[in-house]
Image 1: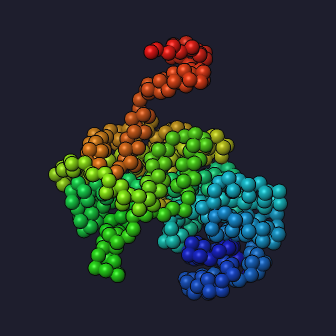
Image 2: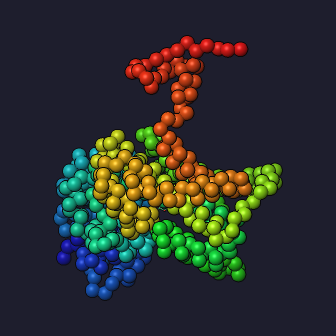
Image 3: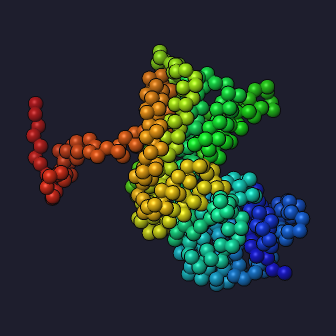
Amino acid sequence: TLYDFGMIGLGVMGRNLLLNMADHGFSVIGFDKDAAKNNALEAAATPGTTVKGVSELSTMIQLLERPRKVMMLVPAGQPVDDVIASLSPLLEPGDVIIDGGNSHYTDTLRRVQQLREKNLHFMGIGVSGGEQGARTGPSIMPGGDQEAYAKVKPMLEAIAAKVKGEPCVAYLGKEGAGHYVKMVHNGIEYAIMQLISESYTLLQQGAGLNNDQLHEVFKSWNQGALQSFLVEITADIFLQNDDKTDKRLVDVISDKAGSKGTGKWTSQDSMELPVAVPTIDTAVAMRTISGYKDQRLEAAGIYKAPESTLHVPAEMWIKQVHDALYFATILSYAQGLAMLFEASKDLKMDIPLPEVVKVWRGGCIIRSTLLEVFTQAYQQRPDLPNILLDKGVAYLLESVEANTRSVVAQAATAGVPVAGLMSALSYFDAFRTGRMATNLIQAQRDYFGAHTYQRIDMPGTFHTEWQHHE
Ligand code: 6PG
């Protein structure tokens, strides 16, 4: 018998996606050079499902139904090209190769074109939700040609997370669009994680909450407007005991934050377009600053913290921090979605934003109840350039704006680093300002470099011989 779907790379993600597919009635086959991983795959299969692991790539290819559908889940970069090099000679026109990893969209674009010459379909697909999501229902962000998508749609729809009966997968645009959307998803993920960590320090310093209390606060937040995967796991984290000491694990984890680059890519690409995503930029920068451990310890000995500390009644402070986190979380989505709006046009990817927010409602790391709000916003206006222009979103922001300002002001006075919250508020204030102070920048540019300027009262381009005054 021939198999419906093949997987290259049987790490946890690859294995779990295959098992998920098998649970939905598809026969699946995986290839990994490591025989132990093949055995692990077969051993983990649900009884009655058709799952096979092989350690020869050509064996897997021979055993696949045509047109073949093969996904690879290998580290981004050279490994993907290496797999393509060994795989493509074994395939036939019409077969579909899927890269389900976090590849950079420009690499995906190059590979799509390279394989098109061989009449092979190459699709870049973003998969989010971690190990558990892969096993039980990830959020899936496919891009590429529609013809190839039609061939894998039934499998992807079967394994995706479901929200209100709808699968969290949809065709998200041409060429590298799938990986582009996943990159921006990760940028938003970085921003929200930074904001949650700022809320954590504000609650500790402002209300003196211990880990048990922090757990309770995040747990209750997860039952309200902030309901989201990241808030939910944050609540869990505060309760985890360390197995090496009698402390809570979170208290013995080093504050140096790692990253694999997708957040940085989002910032880099935003500059290329250009589009402003300052809260994502800030999140990337804060992870970088977290790495300056020795310098920070030295600086802590040089600079005294401000005299004033946060002092607000605990109950009130918790509510204010909640509102600030809610406000800045919306701003993070707004920046990321505005980036997709621009990139879609600029890079001719035709990314359907109403579908993107629907796909993000379930399975992925940034899933949250807010995605329902955005889904409604795009239903009303599919070409919305920025969700801040939606009346429903505006109403939500207005209800928490005053508390956000209060938290940011108090954090600034007390010297608590909340760059994410500040950047969100600053973006908002600039965005809602009809006339910014950037007229002065234009004057300066024209003064020293004859860069010209436009006027508000008449058309045309102007230059002035600016007068120097003693
Ligand atoms: C997901 C995640 C995942 C990502 C990790 C690690 O959607 O499941 O985005 O794809 O690789 O979050 O990212 P960093 O190591 O850069 O924090």
